[in-house]
Length: 170
Image (tube, rainbow, N blue to C red; front, side, top):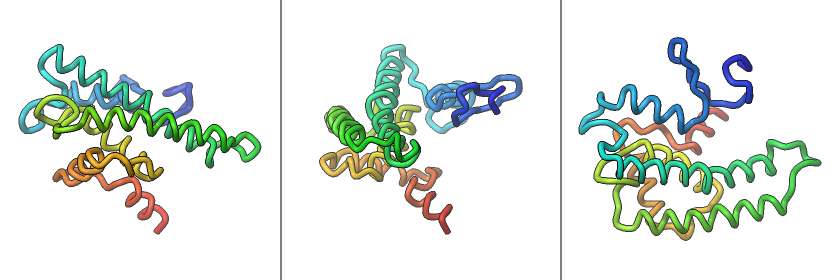
């Protein structure tokens, strides 16, 4: 595994001789390679302007919302007990909530993160917001809660993180 990803982290995609790590890179690669197979066109917007906005929000989700969620996970159960910090968890929660409020504003009156159809950013947003919901971070974000419900109601949507964890425990 370290030969595939020296960082020793998941996910890693192996497609023939190509190895792609980092979840957003994998999402963009798959959308670029297979996106035209989806009804209504690809999962990457057609115009450079819309692509720029998709990239903006995709990276925002990963750096501003997902990163604090990872800090919470690290200091809650991934680090050894003597490395965990309740203060770091509190700071990460604060940071995450502030960025969720920004994304809540962005999503006002929108069905999708960018444009009029689902893009890679929407799939990333659904997963990231589902994780934020598990951490009770969406209480002040009714627009994002409704958006999350609509994304997981899509015909081929995966199960939520909570349902997947419950199935693993069973």
